[in-house]
Amino acid sequence: MHTRHPGRHELGQNFLIDHTIINALVGAVADTAGPIVEIGAGDGALTFPLERLGRRLTGIEIDERCAERLARRVRPTTEIVQADFLDFRLPTTPHALVGNLPFHQTTAMLRRILRSPGWTEAVLLVQWEVARRRAGVGGATMMTAQWWPWFDFHLATRVPAAAFHPRPGVDGGVMTMTRRRSALVQHEHREDYQAFVHRVFTGRGRGLVEVLTTAIPGSSQRRVRQWMRRNRVAANALPKHLAAEQWADLYRL
Image 1 (cartoon, one colour):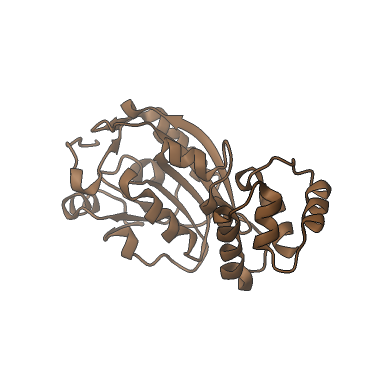
Image 2: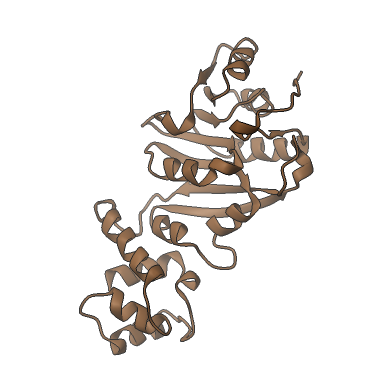
């Protein structure tokens, strides 16, 4: 039986208590394949339902008390590791990720995940606005655009603050990240591509034409306008309005 305790504020502990959301997360993980790594196992609200999937499971938990308590209750096929996820080295072999991420550590953890090899799908509960931004709802952020050639981001559902204990000040959101089978940009060009996206997002100019002309060496406004017409990009568009395939094609330009 799940033991509820107040959580440690310094660790950003907000335990998931809504069984509808728990079942939704487990259902999303059930659609993945391979071993499972759970980020922030806590008291096992997700761990025990995940065990019923019958797959090898590793739970990462920073709180020593939670980790010790949970390790005594899980199945032999489940391993509980007491560690800070930001210092934990994920397997290089294929696996799925799932976790209720501390809201104050979400961006750092996402960067860690995106830079890690091996995992194929991730089902993550994060702050609602972060989930929306990463999925490109209302326009993509620079971080999303920088990783789009290798990952697909999807917003699944909103999670009310009442689904947690202690109750946070904002809602959460379930998002998924899937590693593309065929990258839109070759991996060896990742750093150069990401620097290019940074130049576009931070570039100066009156509109996308001027920004792109500056960001793309040797280009002209005429050439950029031709590219925009060919890709059906509106004249008044901003960098956040570009889709993943458009970013990749723009980089090749």
